Image (cartoon, each protein chain N blue to C red):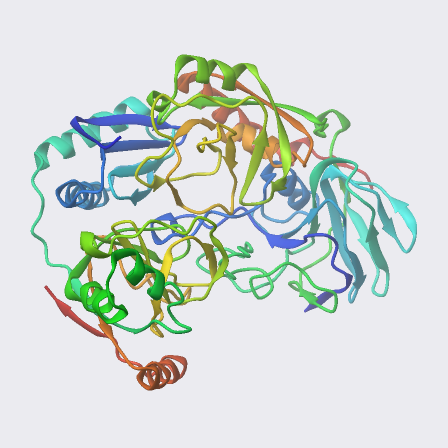
Amino acid sequence: MNLFYVMKAGFFTTVQDLGRYGYLKYGIPISGAMDSFSMIAANLLVANSPNSACLEITLIGPELKALADTQIAVTGGEIPVKINGEDAPMWQTLTIRKGETISFGKVERGCRSYLSVRGGINTPVVLGSRSTYTRGKIGGIEGRQLRSGDVICGFNVQPLETRLKMPEDMIPKFSDDFTVHVVLGPQLEMFTDEGVQTFLSSRYRVTIESDRMGYRLDGPPIEHRGGAEVVSDALLPGAVQVPKNGKPIVIMRDAQTTGGYPKIAVVIISDLDLLGQAKPNDMVRFSEITLKEAHEQLLEYRKKLSSLTQDLVRIS
Amino acid sequence: MSRNYLFVRYVPFGDTALVVEFGDVIDLTLNQKVVALNEAVLGANIPGVEETVPTYRSLLIRYDPAKITYENLVAQIKILEETLGGKVLNKKGRKFIIPVAYGGIHGPDLKDVAEYHGLTEDQVVEIHCRREYRVYMIGFVAGFPYLGEVPEEIATPRLETPRLKVPAGSVGIAERQTGIYPCEAPGGWRIIGRTPVKLFDPNWQPPALLKPGDFVKFVPVSEEEFKRIEELVEAGAYKLKSEDV
């Protein structure tokens, strides 16, 4: 069924779910929501499964006209939401009537906001996921970002009787200064001790050359021990590559699956969502933790995600 | 800065993956070891192992730390690796015959590659087609095969400034590697020709035509033949030549 007519597409709006797993060996990146915590919350607020497809909004939001009665929720980076010109709150179920217009301003804190719709967005499942991977032109709407004139389809499901709200203390607050945890390696021996020290003690600025593929950072150059190239091997989101100029590049969800720059460290999974909210000119600092601590944090993060449904508050 | 390790290295890759590194060189035996270990890991069905990525010289194993500890995973992989004992399976691979239109609009860098080596364009084509290339790894973009190794006589460094768009099907050279762009992508490889054959389709199972351990043989085709094959490919009627080797 037709849900929305896209009047304005916004800066870079794509359909995303939790990602496309199991195809790295074919050169297909994981893709999926850059801030999966916020996307899962958006889904739970309209009683969807956590993996239902949502719209990922980047920096400037779209304008949508509802083609059916439905319910939505908006989460993630702080963004003004208006329904027929009236301010509407984030992080709770919103009721939409056919013909109403949903419009957004610019993301004011963070970088990416999520719009879920009751039942989820229905675009074709490609290799097990609805996530858009624009470079490979697969998933989402024709493998590309939204365009004005697109029609977004959904599923015909019963509306929620009780609206839901995220408790205030559970809403993530994004600043423009990020600290993320890393596990050092896998190619630590390619860097001098000073280089590793520089990496762990400096603040790096997210440059304009940053997107779903990766963030190029600017700041004190990291010193290599010998050459700055290795024979290409596998990459995963979170990997911090350091090319010859010493400026780190953090690999994100749409990145190529292999690369030939040495990797000094990898951002832990539970901090990737936070990093997904960094925008150009924000600052990032890397803090070392052990593998054991990283695993404890991962289990803790999963626990938080799986109990999220129970934490939501009924509002009517 | 090439290294071939005396011992296989086990290193964490963040909190959800393990890398088994055999060395830091492009080497046939080393890549065969990677492919052999990959098959052993997949065959062992270790609970908690989610996916594997074989590359030139290492195997990445993604795991769920809630289902298996890092130490336990390393211990199990070490047993598999020691059981193989550096043996490489002489398993049969598949060989694909890939038609390529060389030079002209399809291969804008063929002329430069020829000049770089003091050869004629025809000689470069003849040398590029002489060998069967092994698929060392699939990476970069969906279905991109890293093939090796091209004869030293035509090994050419990458472009100083990568192109923003390389058309799908383009066949390139980067040092002693050669490869095929399955979809349009930015890239710095020297483009010497183009194939009309499709290497990747998300509707295929598996979605990529080639896998590590397969072989590719290029054959030169004329512009007319290129167009004829292209039409057949688009109609879904092209029969790619392949054989077991």
